Length: 253
Image 1 (tube, rainbow, N blue to C red):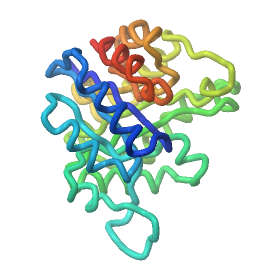
Image 2 (image 1 turned 45 degrees about the horizontal axis):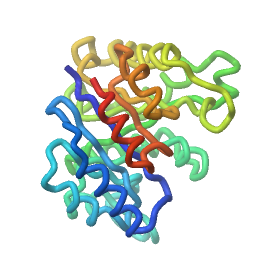
Image 3 (image 1 turned 90 degrees about the vertical axis):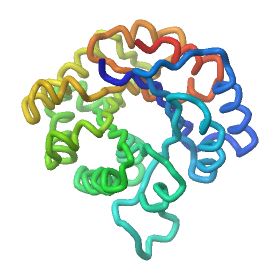
């Protein structure tokens, strides 16, 4: 079975004390995280070392950075390199989140470079893709997402692509009042897996975890995660509430 993943994206939320309390509530709960499952906490940069210490003795729990720079080093004030992340024992990094694409104009080519930087330091990229409302309304979302994958990931070989986690974000359903159904999630996840299979082969595509990043909550996690091509979620707001995120973790296959 592909790795089933519940990934928390705290975004720009919590103080250090608040984050420490939240993480402690989650990791000290009585839930069981099986070996085919991973729980990942993508926390703000100032919290990485502290959070890593909190999960260090917990099985199948990890910490992720929310971003990295596409260059190895240099005069990039305010940026963080993968070498820095590796030096503090961080094993995951979110790459290409829709907010990074929109607010910081990150291109598919830049994201390809970030993926390469991560893999060069054995950091697993959680590569985000997804379409905005206008693309969905024009019914060209399949081609749009396929291009994101092609331009950022198709330079990899079959071995390297299996070290990438993909997260699909239905941007059109986040904060718009529109709702993405579990069936719509499955439809796009199946499309992504087909795109990967056409490039890398069925066996490789079947081994890549694809997460759903569209308003997963404790109340809908079971239905969403039960879809055959959905391998967990990249969770925003609900990951900031301990009981909600615990429910989401328990919903993993």
